Image (cartoon, rainbow, N blue to C red):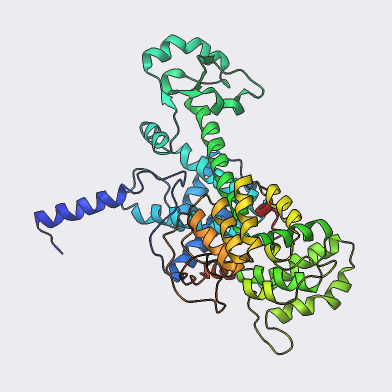
Amino acid sequence: MQFSGNKRRKLKLAGDQKNACYPHSLQFYLQPPSENVSLIEFENMAVDRLKLLKVVENLGVSYVKGTEQYQNKLESEIRKLKFSYRENLEDEYEPRRKDHISHFILRLAYCQSEDLRRWFIQQEMDLLRFRFSILPKDKIQSFLKDSHLQFEAISDAEKTHRDQDIIASSSGGIKLDLESVYKVPFADALDLFRGRKVYLEDGFAYVPSKDIVAIVLNEFRAKLSKALALAAKSFPPCMRHLHRVLRENHHLRHGGRMQYGLFLKGIGLTLEQALHFWKQEFVKGKMDPDKFDKGYSYNIRHSYGKEGKRTDYTPFSCMRIILTNPPGQGDYHGCPFRHSDPELLKQKLQSYKISPAGISEILDLVKGSHYQVACQKYFEIIHKVEDCGFSLNHPNQFFFESQRMLTGGKDPKKEPSLPETPQPRPGAAGTPKARDAPSTLAALNSSMEVDLEGLEAYFSS
């Protein structure tokens, strides 16, 4: 097929515009993706990313990181899975797009426990280390700038002026005529100060390019850890309370197990994961594993539609939690805004770092029996928004709307979904309909055997 001169120019311009979205073969993943992705592509990207990170883990065990054999093996595997890895390759838009979107998909799966989060961060850091090590030297400065890292390469004249001090304080074996030197704010170079000297002047550290990777990785780890920890905001107070009690007592009575278990099912916990999760907790409470298998696993399988009438139970809505099966002594289920003593509720909100003004607003709504609106106000306060743009009527809606907001998703599409009528805001003429909670996490967890060993990372803040 032949193209005219104008068509060739237009195609080249379109290609340049697409490539401008991903100027480098590596990135800090500072902005979440905002495009529409089909479920099939979503799952394929997630599985390929997981395969890549497993390769990174296995090669790190089998070979010394950074050696030629390690580098060659990893580059070969990245190429097979069609991810980006080198700057000078053509037609890199799709591999870089895949790299970007798949990273954020796995963030959703691997933010759910400290063990998962630690594993994910380590493999992503090793992958970044490899990509950074093969980044052409003339591209490093632009990558740092695009990643919002204020590390400035000093001129050759300044490098010559400071060469003896830099050599004396470096990790050794460097040839300054072959390396760039970066001027790094002191606070960003703290990790380099452990065990050796670093040349400092006027609040800046002067770091050879061979050592800059340590600072880059530290910044990447800090940003990624912070992003993953944001998931703590995504559980509504009723589920946050149940989880905390479960972690402390290693037991919940039937009402708590049903309310919390169906919520976890709704956000993507599979039957196998649920059995493992509950058994792990109850055994920590000194329960015999056989007793759990005989007395509790049946109810879990029943809630997933695998026993009894084979009814596939759905998570409880806010109205059901508020109006039915109120908690008795020794119970922890229910709605904190409906079933808690006002003073205890105030103390709990204080422990969640809600401001006095915010607590006062919430308690006023509770006094007026506007329990769902009080929970919605809590949502708005912890997410720092004036108006969340939806009417809250379901704990799983709370979770998915929070995830949408924290990951930079677009405004929710208003569609009818959950059957209960939400409570109107005081004085409001009407309320918008709730958004249907997406099933992307459930789809992801069903396509990959993600081991949810615990959920304490949600409650670390």
